[in-house]
Length: 265
Image 1: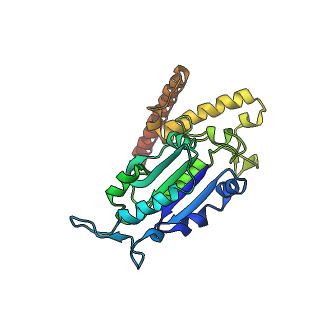
Image 2: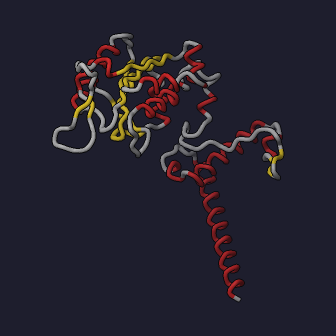
Image 3: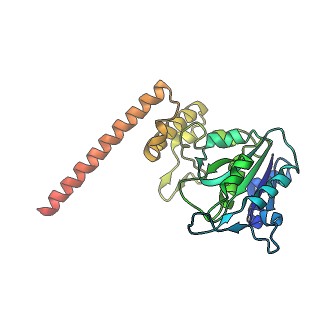
């Protein structure tokens, strides 16, 4: 899979894509990551690429001229049957694991990074870019967002990781958070690995992991359960966990109240 990142700061992309999984994926030939400097396509003698927005307002806006010139040149470098263009923008739909898995099926992604106040709307319309956001917050530019996409999508490309299980058993793949993980030593600081994980019974381990995944999601991201595809048994388990938690919270509240009354005496 090929990634082409259009940016004012290509070194930010190059420095961060040569390490770990993405770096190894490139060395093995499963991934290609290229960074292209939008300034190289400026018609201004000082390589200027931005200007003030019409209608007033703070900040600078990237001009459509160098942005589209860069895009046209880069797109022509490696024609691909399944190529999509993404504009990293806080106005876009928020990236999800499901969306990342969809994009991992592409042959090529062109990632467009804005900066400061973003990019002239005409360039986005001309290119036909899909807007994606990595969260409900604002960054100085799209480079960090592009790096997130390269990592999140690139690791799901066939051959980059040893097997699909490396990402299909992680948080968000099936709409739930992942179960707790443990390694050596068996006991540490008075804390012991759950005995079920030492049993060697893979059926019971799988059952425990699934239940812990449900519990983790309930405790940390209950909003995900509303959208997750749960079986009837899963829904029953979640109901039981909610009842247990309500009882525990009630006991804790009663204990705190009793302690307060004792202190007043």
